[in-house]
Amino acid sequence: MDHHPKHQYSYYFHVFVAIAIALAVLVCCEEESVKPLVKTVKGKKVCTKGWECKVWSEYCCNQTISDYFQSYQFENLFSKRNSPVAHAVGFWDYHSFITASADYQHLGFGTTGTKHTAMKEVAAFLGHVGSKTSCGYGVATGGPLAWGLCYNKEMSPSKLYCDDYYKLTYPCTPGVSYHGRGALPLYWNYNYGKAGEALKQDLLSHPEYIEQNATLAFQAAIWRWMTPVKKHQPSAHDVFVGKWKPTKNDTLSKRVPGFGATMNVLYSDQVCGQGDVDSMNNMVSHYLYYLDLMGVGREEAGPHETLTCAEQQPFNPSSDSASDS
Image (tube, rainbow, N blue to C red; front, side):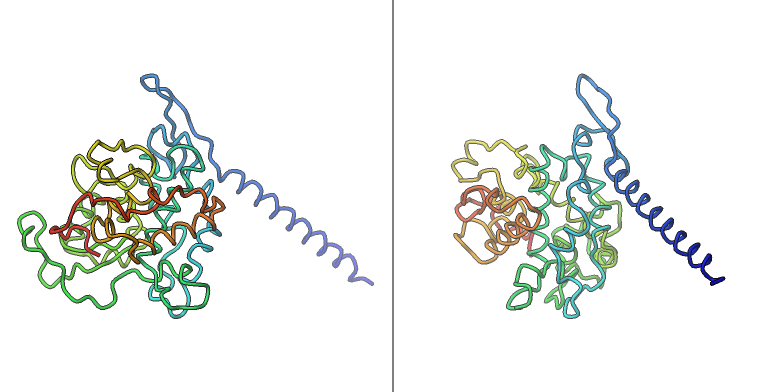
């Protein structure tokens, strides 16, 4: 009997600990959504909002990505990425995606317009990523769309992807291979050079940095999403969120805002203007699948002519291998 008070003490102690943990969880998760600081600059409302949206910007007044896209959703989208047969087990994670996106949210990445529009952009960007890094072809378990982020590099490159045309601006480092690496795989010395300049990393000498650091790999991909291939052209972000106004020539070329135009910006005639080719359909399928998993629903993706680029004339017809993948 003399042990009884100790048991009682132990019981109350455990109850106290459980309550403390529950309160901590409540406090933590209520604080997750940081209220923006607001000011007016030249009659325009701008905000800053914690680590995810550090720079004063109109976009920081909106919800940030972690407000509507949590870790469990990332796990749902890329559920097979750490399977034993995947090629980048333990590499990709939610934290690296959110950390990378923090550098671009004040520019409108995942923060443009309503929460609905923002969620669609994240699904569209990740649709490209999932399609480009998938090893789901012919794999039964979970279906082919569950295998995004299976790779972080091209497994058996057939060449070094060194283009001597750029030897004055982006000279190849001797012995270095510029094969595909990353979330939207980078190819060629000039693409590594441009991305390296933007990200302040010497990717021309060390392209392998991309396959060693998941945050950097996502940053390079988001940079590519947010950056036009050429001057006077829109970025994939612009054509998706409605910041691009098609010219008369664009309209005649059947180029319209939407997911289809993002494929046109990124891959031009490798994917677009050739009817319903597999590579295009695969990206569309990933996008629709992710819209469903994120709770937006594929019916929100828009009509066929905006969803695909089957009939669109390419922005940059090849001869240039700029986005070779």
